[in-house]
Image 1 (cartoon, rainbow, N blue to C red):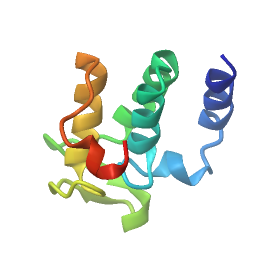
Image 2: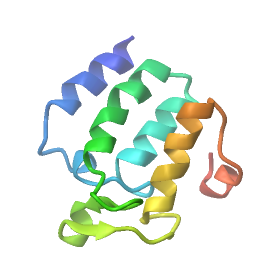
Image 3: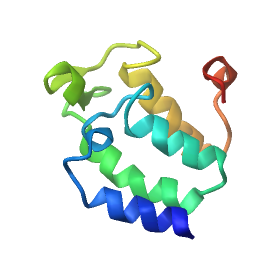
Length: 105
């Protein structure tokens, strides 16, 4: 699809700010979830590997450029790692996460 083409195009541009943040609010998790909701499974899975590269060596944390590359392993919904895990769970189970309506989804 044309959306998959755009994902591939921007995925190769590492300077794009969305690819430097793992968060739901303003980063890759949010984009992946939007693609998932649009039924663009191949596009969202295409970006999942990039998201997993942002995973830290601890059990739950992801890195985020908006916090000067600091580890975000808190449970804040918008910019913490919990939102990233909810997006991953949604992709694996092929179900929306409970409460996504709070974010206009």
